[in-house]
Length: 266
Image 1 (cartoon, one colour):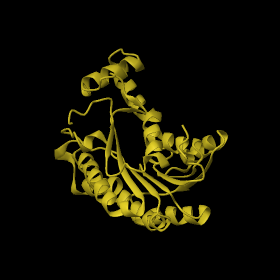
Image 2 (cartoon, one colour; image 1 turned 90 degrees about the horizontal axis):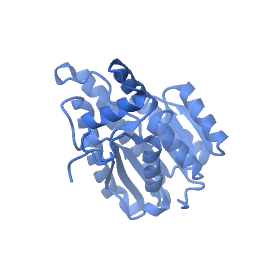
Image 3 (cartoon, helix red, strand yellow; image 1 turned 120 degrees about the vertical axis):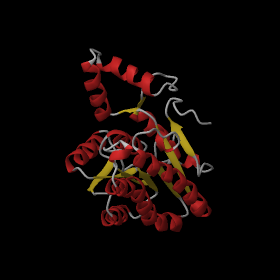
Image 4 (spheres, one colour; image 1 turned 60 degrees about the horizontal axis):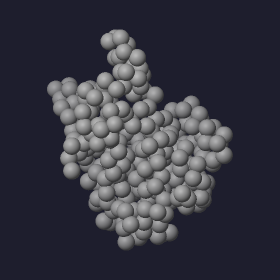
């Protein structure tokens, strides 16, 4: 299927590892010119090299998305290099410790909101004038199943992701008249190198192989997952690529959960 992304310019924040890297590689494979933005230069260079080796076009920009100035710099540099921006994937974020309610300080709350919420707000603010001027754009906010079905842990992360879901609806209503479609993608458990390492370490203590540990972890903590295993980063990337494409022109303001059915809400 031709997603008609050839020649489009895409920014993927947090695009050097895990889900973000899979998204960057998928968009590049469809012919988009991809700007991969994240903090670690080594991982950025590896991602851009992998895209180039596969015949795609990408550049790396090192940026800390918890701060306003680097976000604007990424957008300005993208426009300088490629003339405009068509697609923004807000993937920068994370659910870092502490995770217990009693341990989460005001500083932890603010740091999480800056990275998981305000980075998306600032990036959208920076790209929207370009998208509105050309009457075409796609903004995909990467949220989490925790934004709809939070648990007792990571209250600050879950709250930030719920806010992302709300932001998507607001932006979709604001920018839709200009041909800018805004959607959310909410992954559940997804296999990334870091996630696999953490689960494998826990399984080793119980005498389980890495694959056995993944299955046991999924069944225990995500009983609603009908497949019984975590998803793959490429599966998230496939969904994002569709939402970024010409084929999604009548889809906006929606939250697409990709969690194997683990979220119980309708």
